[in-house]
Image (cartoon, rainbow, N blue to C red; front, side, top):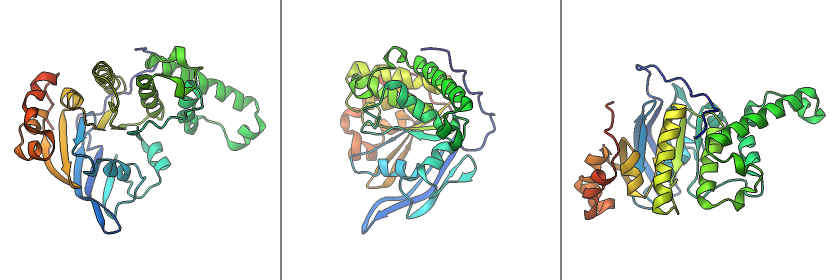
Length: 284
């Protein structure tokens, strides 16, 4: 991985929670998808959100990122109530995400996919863009150089001129993460980043997630069904079923929780934590 992008300074040890979800509930007509979801995430944590298909995990992501307005409850990010704020405003405040189904701009180049994420920080006005004046040209040059440096962080610099949809699946995943990080988030939400990956690709993804967390001092919340990924990288795990939290704890606690085993993991889960765990979780 390249060192072209300087790391973000680490937050103070006594910093308040970065994200607090308070009694989040989402109803669609007569269907209650999420009920009274609560979660506090501190700066620097790497947290997993797991549960059966249809348990409400992506709905929770969508409420945090402004795609859905909660029926009730609130989302506090960086000491600001962001409940109901538009997704692009939430992104500019410091929350970025990826999607279960890759959502690149498939017919744009790899470079342009990252350049797009930089545009809120472009530094020129609408009139500059219309006139294509010297200020516009200079800022566009700087933006392109930053995007190229960022691609270098993800070893995609040699792919910058390729059309995004032509990349191998694993590289498309990396590009989507790179594009999310180009928005300079404090909190990164990953929605099933290992979906469709083979075991070797999943292991490489785990290394990448560890790298970007350390490199950019990120806080990460991820949804994932591959237990080798969840048990291998997450420090804390929240389990939801039928829209409600049924367990919270370390991977070791979750993989031995009878209710989680019954609802989701199954009896073969007991060996996963020992097999895939890489390091001990830190305390709150």
